[in-house]
Length: 247
Ligand SMILES: [Zn+2]
Image (cartoon, rainbow, N blue to C red):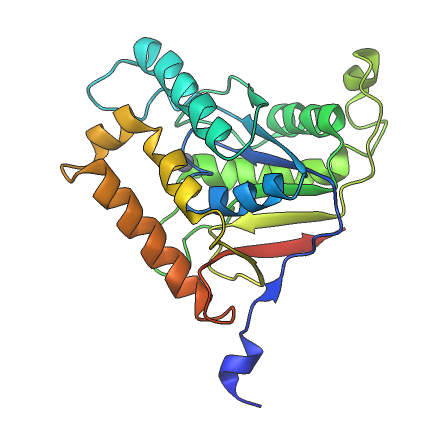
């Protein structure tokens, strides 16, 4: 048995109908995940997005009051490209999203509204696997999402949700963490790759502020390189990786 064999990524389970993706910012899902989302919606699965913030602190030259609505529009357009029509914003403040009961409650409420079997989030760990430090918003939202998958099923933790008519949902079977430095599973990115490129390109104002490169070249190169690198552990096809937690 070679070492390569041990680190091969497994196919992500596909015996589910509804997924909910919960992330901190507009564009978090488009840096890779949306290729998997395109494949899921192609197969007739329902996917909804929940964003903790509007990413209003993401563009240096644009004050948050103007940036928030712009990034919300870009995120909705971006989701539509991969077949996602439901995008909700929880209204936490970009850059200082706090891990704690308020965030867990808001995410648990979203899980009860959408009743997913699969929850997707972004890397909750301190780094991206190497020495590049993760942002506090990703860590807070990732951890709170892992916790909220269980909170959603408990009647007594957030009783105010019952008063709002949100009954417990115990149906979350997995939480798949994208962008993890310790991936265990993957999804074939080939069928959705072109739409993933177009989906990330919908964040045009953000990308133009981020890089001097032509946005299309930057996006295509980034998504091709990352999915190709992941594919080396997934039968040689471009892939999106996840660290999968079961319940
Ligand atoms: Zn982010």
